[in-house]
Image (cartoon, rainbow, N blue to C red):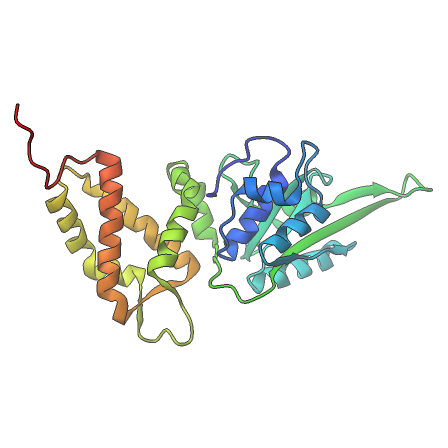
Length: 288
């Protein structure tokens, strides 16, 4: 359920919907979305995607504009509310999800791109987005259609991902693509140990502040109890947690600080055991 390329040509619709749901903190695998939508080798149209979105408590709206400036304003207005929008580009042949507009640039999740995260200027996006349709009676008259499909949750969501140009460039880097593939696993773990930031979150700290206070101690304990752990690799796991927590605005209540130390320590211990293996513990040696 992470951020990775689609394995075939026809699953772009479920991948685009998966990416939109991911922004809302709803974790859904593309295979389940494909099943809910009834995806075939011919792809998935907006009607089927609307049906699948409803399964996950969201409405997939349909808005059509003929004027590119109005289409851009409509798209940006939804993005500024934290609502991702699905677009069918390349002459209605491929689905992508637009998640952010920043400084005139648009951040897309395109499952056909090697990095998945794409940064596009408005002229680039407009060219991809426009569906060109010749008039039925005057073939020299060509209409340009701009269809957008905002993904609106029916109820209140726990948290929303806030993508930025900085985060998109970070995840586009080849060295971070493995991290992007595991994005949903980090989200799932952090939702269990953190809380979304709210107006009542006055007695809370960010994960960055938590790591500033306790990272050294947690890593020292990991090394003591497990041994032979690459400290840079362990630190990288914590850094990735920090990135995801910041993207979703997740914080730690002051009253849960000790519990979070234990939770992060357990996660790191399980990671180290899976990564490096572990010998028998509290088990007597068998006589030879």
